[in-house]
Length: 141
Image (spheres, rainbow, N blue to C red):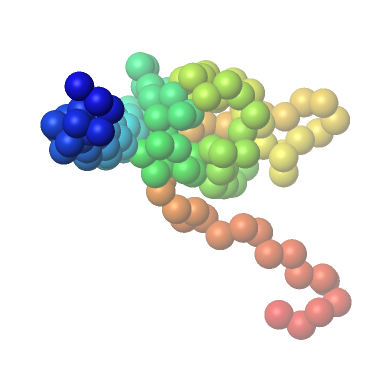
């Protein structure tokens, strides 16, 4: 049996199997993305409801894969709120979100080396808090 006859006999089966595998892989990736988003949303709701770092929490990679790319935090002292982009946080992708709370500090309350801690509020898909716009004191508002 020559190579050409094998291609004729098995070529259609091989192409069909490749197409089926590609479609199954795309479906699986979509399902993983939906599951990651659902887990991030559930953790965010628990955070808002309980007011503390709920455990277990999704990882940075799961949040980014699910489309939840922003973490909303609030300073314990001055009550300033900020939205932090998760893709800018320099931690391993398998780091749980709740472990970030101890390393986040408020910049506006910082005095020397001491800075008050912040508390996490929720995860969001887009930035909800606008960045602080600086206006010069001499300019008219």
